[in-house]
Amino acid sequence: MAIDGNKIIHAVMEGSQIRESKGIIPLFGVYLSIFPINYYNKLSYGFEKMRKERQSEAETLLVRAAQECGYATFQGVRNSWEWEEIVKPMIDRKEDQIEGFSAVAFAFGWGDLKVKKLVPEETLVIQASGSYEASGYLDQYGKATSGKCYMLRGVTGALMDLLYGEEYPEGCFTFSAEEHLCRAKGDEYCEFIARKSSD
Ligand SMILES: [Zn+2]
Image (cartoon, rainbow, N blue to C red; front, side, top):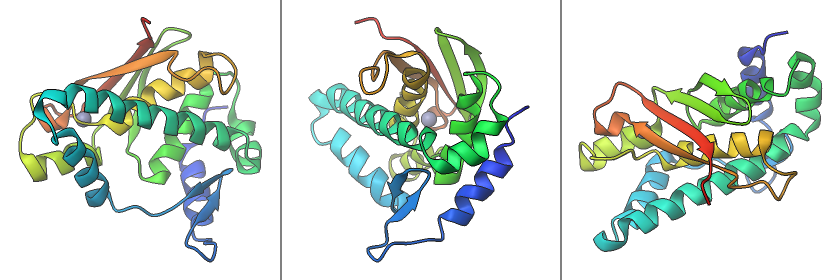
């Protein structure tokens, strides 16, 4: 059976109306909260631009933070009762999980992730046409000279880690992703490619 992304998105949207007393949203096995994207972008690019000579170090840290976040979040998601009930019946093969994760990520507001190519154990290509990071960067700083969607770049690596890395929690950073096309630098959409990490 093919993965019905809309069904997953609806389940998340419906469940996300439940709030604990502190505003936390317990859903799909993880704890979520509402976080304004402008604030996130300000923190993230403010950190990156703090010291010009250490910009690439900041970029690496932001991508790694996103990858760890994606790795832990989707491990929680795929062990949840909601996943068991809603998504698992639609999964025929291991690779289908990626489509399920993308639908959940979309509903979480992380971006409209589209799986363009998946070579098991090797490569994952994901495209996004509405990344909030690219939009935020363009609004705040204008056109960039390199990819700026650190969150989705880390998440792309994390999805491959969850499928083909060692068993959780040992598999994080087995893969790493690059963003060679980004709307922030004038491309039509953002594109992320995850491959096995070289180190
Ligand atoms: Zn981008």
